[in-house]
Amino acid sequence: MSRPAVPSPETTPSWASGVRRRLPFYLLAALLLALLAGVVTFIYLEQLRASMVPAAAALVARLSIRPGETITETMVEVRAVPEAIVPPERLTSVAQAIGRTVLVPLAAGEVILPQRLSGADEAGLSRRLPDGRWAMVLPGAWLASPIPEIGTGDRVDLLAYQSGQPADQAAVIVSAIEVLTVAGSPSQAEALTVAVELEEAAAVTYARANGFLLLPLLRPAGG
Image (tube, rainbow, N blue to C red; front, top):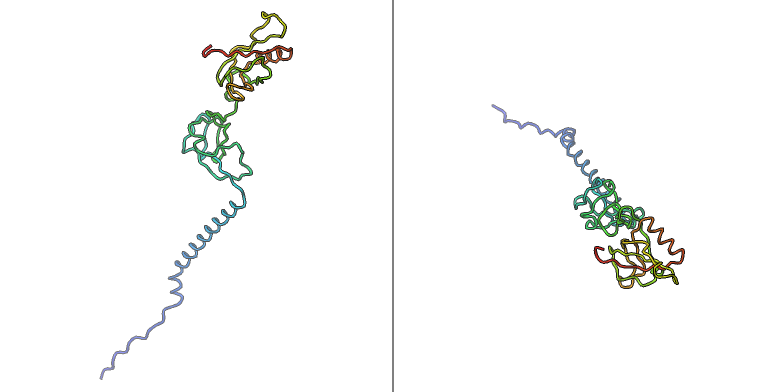
C-alpha cells in the first residue's frame, strides 16, 4: 500500500540575502537624502547671508567685454551686490548701458560705472571737451554786462576794456570759445563753463588780474 505524498517542508528566506538585494536601494536613498539636505542647507545659508549683509542693485557685466564694443542686452544684467563695496555712481538698469561703447576692459561680474562707458550725459565733462581744450568757468560777476540768452554749444567772444580808457583800446581777447554748460537759466545765466586753449585761459586771467572788464558777445550760428 502506497503512502500519501508528503509536501516539502517550507524554508525561511535567508536574512542576509534579503539585505544584499535591498542594499543598492538603501544606498541610493541615503545618497538622495544627503543631496537634498545639502541643497536645503545651502539655500538656508544663502538666505541668512543675504539678510545679514545689506545689498544694492547694480549693473554688472555678464561676460568679459573689450574696449570699443557696444553694449547689448545679453552682455549685462542687474545683480544684488553688497552695499558696502558698490560705488554710489554705479548704473542700476540695463537700459542705462544699452547702445553705449565700452572705453576700458570690463571683466565678467564687474560692476559697471558710467565713466567706463561713452555716449551719455552723465559721463565726465572731460570726455566732452574738444581735443586740445580745457574747461574754464566764467562767473557772471566777471562780466561787464548780463550774459546773453545762451545754451550749450553756442560760441562767444570776450571783449576786454578798462574803465576810463579810449574806446579804441578795447579788444577781443578770445574768439569763438565753445560753451559747455550754463549755470542757471539760459536767460539769466549765473556762470558759463567754456572750452579754451591754455593761451586763451591765460588771456582771460591776465585781463581779470589787471582790472579789465569783460563783455561777452554771442556769435551767430555758424559764425
